[in-house]
Length: 244
Image 1 (cartoon, rainbow, N blue to C red):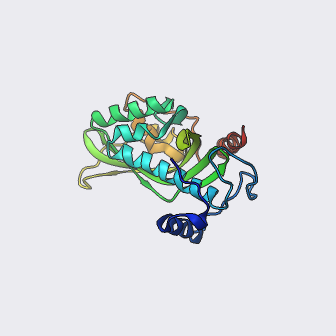
Image 2 (image 1 turned 45 degrees about the horizontal axis):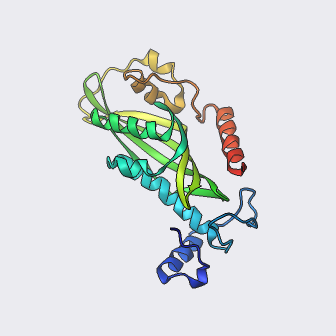
Image 3 (image 1 turned 45 degrees about the vertical axis):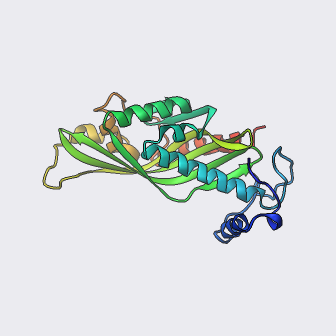
């Protein structure tokens, strides 16, 4: 159970964590950017409540990706809310199916890893949205030559409180740019330049790889080359955050 006592009465370790969070620049604000005044079950409305929830959500999303990369499927599944949704390049469905699909991909020999930057979190009662800059590494064969595809993305998360604990309620990605490089510089595959030119620049090489897998490339994903899609996504996330 979360311990939501005032900061002045917390154990020294917890109090130190809170003070470190404040020093790092984490601020406790509502979805509108104002200090919180409402009451939420399981919260004491003490000044450290939002800071603690921000830390919990940040830990949750980092733990989910770490568990996925380590093949710890039960730990990954435990991070997801039963009514969660995921919409990314290779999957559109619920969190449980996303975990199962990730597990199948790993079992097939596909290796992908996530290098995560710190997560920024906004809390509104029992809901939160978060954003994590991420570098996605995928090791894939192209014409039987081992390649590393590197993609810069921003992970957009939804989180929701369930039985006094936070669970992931949604995941989307904003695609920025990617590139493809051989794992062995002395071996380089022939790339179909005409095909490559037909894909969007924000995830061009990802699309090229997906075209050679059971998952077909999509043209409708949020990317910096389609700012209107990104803007609509961010507005939808902000609206979801403030819904009761």
